[in-house]
Amino acid sequence: MQACSAGLCFPPRPAGGSRLAALSSIRILRRRSCATWALPLPMGVTWRWLVTAMKTVAVLGGGIGGLAAAYYLSKSVQVTKVILLESSSRYGGWLWSTQRLDGAVFEHGPRGIRPAGAVGLNTLNLVQDIGLESEILPVPYSHNSSKNRYLYVNEKLHKMPSGIWGALQTVSPFSRPILHSIAKEIMVKKGKEDDETIHSFVSRRLGNELADIAIDSLCRGVFAGDCRKLSVRSCLPPLYKAEQRRGSIVLGMLLGSGQDQVVLPGALAQRSREESWAQWSLLKGLGTFPEAITDWLAQSGKVQLCRHAAAKKLHLSPSGWEIQLDDGTISADHVISALPAEPLSSILPPPMEPLIKQVQEISFVTVAVVNLEFKGAVLPVEGFGHLIPSTEDKGVLGVVYDSVPFPQHNSPEGVTTRLTVMMGGAWFQEVFGSPNKVSEEHLLAVATEAVRVQLGVRAAPSWSKVALQKNCIPQYYLGHWKRVECMRRYIAEKSLPLSLAGACYDGVSVNDVIYSGRMAVENLLGPIT
Ligand SMILES: Cc1cc2nc3c(=O)[nH]c(=O)nc-3n(C[C@H](O)[C@H](O)[C@H](O)COP(=O)(O)OP(=O)(O)OC[C@H]3O[C@@H](n4cnc5c(N)ncnc54)[C@H](O)[C@@H]3O)c2cc1C
Image (cartoon, rainbow, N blue to C red):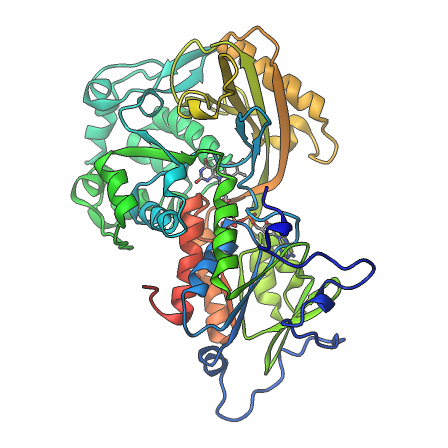
């Protein structure tokens, strides 16, 4: 991981002294005992006016969302200084890889990024801009890991139907050809609700079987969540929009249901289209993505990168924000929060109670990510991995066959197979108990047993790592869109110099989160060129 010594970040904390004191460029203010955001503004002065006159923007949270916001801010001439505050010792949040001494790479968070859609192109433009192009590991649609995806149902692996022939045939575990459900879908009436759970939406339009098996598994794979609680409008907006605009998912897919975002592809994004990439990673793992953004930000000369700098409290006065840290206070004209819900709700000023309440209502789930390495080629099938519906096994969400899409991450010494078992999610508490009490040994034993039973791998892993990712994926439950709209309306009506970015609001994928950073900046300062 990138260290401070590379000159990227905060100067080291002076022995026995305040780290903030070492930074002459950050104004240290005297702590205030009460929140002052409600002070009346001088006649004719609005928060919007203060925003347009802004000089310093503080970004809270150095995950991929905060890094993206800092990147887009640094491109604006209207901003003279960006301060990025990260509470931990490392930037990147859930983007976290281990590169072992022999060169093998293991991902403990995201492992593949999709290039599709405007948000996918946007990420590739960023990758190109920061000079990471040569590190890209693309996986085309023609690759086995893109074509072969499995479900583990009735104690057996089943290859998901793919292509037109797959859709025409009855493929177990389904009792009818998928095309049968698709053909009938066009005739189904448009729903009347302004939101619906994913399970209810898919049952209504495509039948119970697809909802119970395929969609249940998919939601566990993408959100580690329960499709009977997750909102179709917020989690799968293309499906929701297709029904709203065309009256059918199928017609929406065929005729288009309106492109909301347009991103001009750069050379790398163009290449991804020409070569038909399904997903991509980086040579030394996705953990090197935030490191490269951090390098770029440090060289921009405009961004002050601060690790070990948790925002503890926010105070708003007519002259802007005061952000209380452990060892002092810094000031900023505007704040972009790219924090998870819990820390954000705990630092907002108490008078912003309505906003705090809305933020507190966003739920998160915990996922145990267990990386396993085996000697030899141990997989019975070649593909991306398999997902498991909640009716089959609540605790184990799925297994990713990492070695298939990214063999470059295998150890160069001999043949090995890398797998990742994802466990828990919305079922964590029910199956494993409190995340604070469960032992790594137990999680490793469950993961190893799942691989033995589901893939027939009898050997013990030659290497393993258990990462318990507590509260790592926000859950967009029914009505999430209303909550987000309410939060944004509150901020707008009060003209608060505050923007929201990150995984809590408009999508949890790395692409969505990066795009949320861009949108936060564009809504504040206008289009980024
Ligand atoms: C196990 C797992 C697998 C995933 N797989 C994929 C995948 O394959 N593809 C994909 O596209 N997406 C995937 N995702 C989703 C994606 O990785 C996340 O949604 C995204 O990384 C979230 O980024 P973020 O910046 O919003 O939040 P975070 O990564 O949570 O970053 C928030 C940052 O804020 C910091 N912070 C917290 N409190 C404070 C404070 N008070 N002051 C300052 N800083 C603070 C934290 O330390 C953290 O660094 C996966 C996620 C997980 C957990």
